[in-house]
Image 1 (cartoon, rainbow, N blue to C red):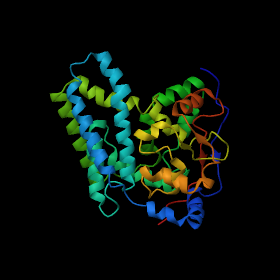
Image 2 (spheres, one colour):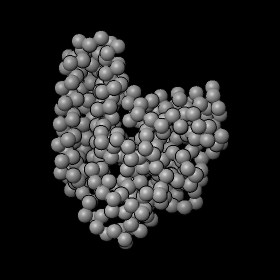
Image 3 (spheres, helix red, strand yellow):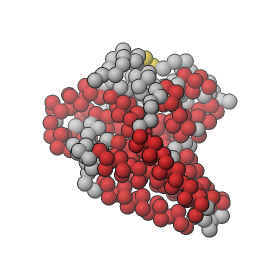
Image 4 (tube, helix red, strand yellow):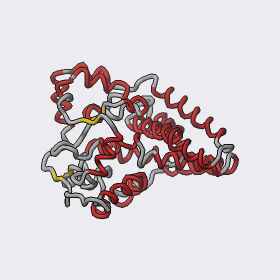
Length: 321
């Protein structure tokens, strides 16, 4: 089973999440960062073109051998789908058409969701924005593992399995920790996605639907691009709860690695987050940071001091209106 995780509880913090305070300090010194607010005009076209190309690739899968389908799903299809997932993350922050056009943003997210196969684009926003506002809240931040996860997967082998199954925990955890009644648009988005999946299965075949779904699931588990799930908020250094990654995979993930910058300035699009760091290096250069998501996954699994418990958590104080 490997070494047992040394932590037996989360790191509980009596303070508020750090990003609102740092945002205020940075803006007092560098008010020009506000000029970076708002969507990147090229972003929506990148999403549309990527989605169309990924949909087009589905027509070339059915003639491949099963082994090649799985390899291609892991090495290519899943990577593109994960990139689209992070495009949906950007869209959740209204970076498609801006905050004045919420329905356009939602429709763009639903379109980008099609080749992924797992209907989440509308629901994701409802939980993700609360992750920003209430980071670490024991109820409202569903990004934090449950006690059941932390206790069950508390060894080297257990963490390996947990990383493999991460897409399932990520998807199902909110239903148990913080369930919400589905909205009409959520139901519509699920129906559209399932109808599209059925069409793919019916007219393109089993290999193609497997390529879509398996690629998405594998690229959210034990996969280099999935390293950001661990790198963003797991406590690799005591007292630090958000970490940026400054490696090459930012190029295909809309700079989600610039995670301290993103949480400090969620109104800045991913394409401009490097400019935030460049404008205010004194606030970011000395923070603990990552340079390899593969190393993050390896360290998370092998280091007994890190595991699902390695998160900073806060007592629930209720929603603020």
